[in-house]
Image 1 (cartoon, rainbow, N blue to C red):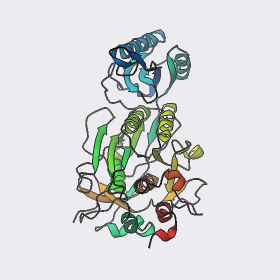
Image 2: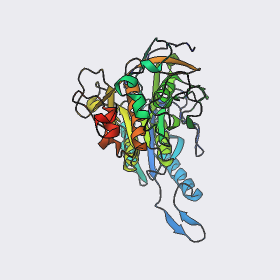
Image 3: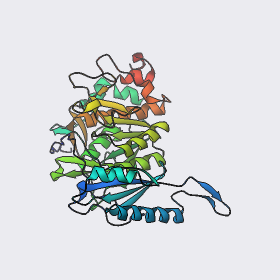
Image 4: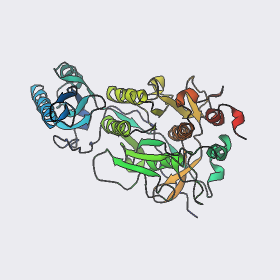
Length: 403
């Protein structure tokens, strides 16, 4: 029997625009995120040329065109030199038709003024601050076996739901911290494991592992829990990292953007964003593309932020809160978020609490609905008068669909 392991609470914070080092991409101009200047980094988007046909060479003008890529790098260096900023890094965003360049504004210069000046440069689509996000969640102790105490086992009649759908073949992008892909309840469930955060590699982090277990832990294997969508294909996209000894999990906008770009290009069906923070133009544009591609995006609603925070406030994103919230605002969906057993790094299990995990429950339900052809999910998602998600009605069209 595996022992439940309590761990430190993750605090929901809205950070001032700060960053951590970005993953070093193939197109890196120089090392990004040197110590001490993270809070002065900005993002500059250079427009890609529209695709055009070249005889004997196919279409050009995209990121794969070496000449165009080098030209954009030269332009970025020139712009950086003219405005007295330092070019640090670059990353392609072909979904948006831009290259994203990371630049550092030296002390003594106004960041907002530099952003405004750079945005007027020919060839620049826009410029913005780097943004940071934080992830909510708490834990407590419990015991094994775990399935009988899963709130969805009772409230959502999870066994009945899974008799007709398990999320088979549905790809769920978990944009979060590092998932323990070798956990006995997750081994074989993760089909993609990518790291978009810089720094040394890590084996596993708590929050991403918790979220992954709630969504897609194996069912019927005799141990641990059953994820809401155990038949789904999980894409573990690390865009967040633990800090302060695991007390907080933070994400910065460039790493999130890289993960979203990857999810879109690799045809994710559902994107789980168990995070909240200030609005961000780059992320907004990428999420608009995702929603336009009929990808279901589920995000955490934070009652302490205007409009519930970003990205939950973005049109087309499904905002989810812990159903224990005293008053559920119109348009927000409540899901179980208290005493949820889930996977813990290192092969164990823990009980967790918080809106992060309510989001994961709804992402799993989205996968079940996708398998059953209940699309678009946002239009099929049924909400009771108290704001709680009605899983049976969502999946079957009426509450009588579940025994």
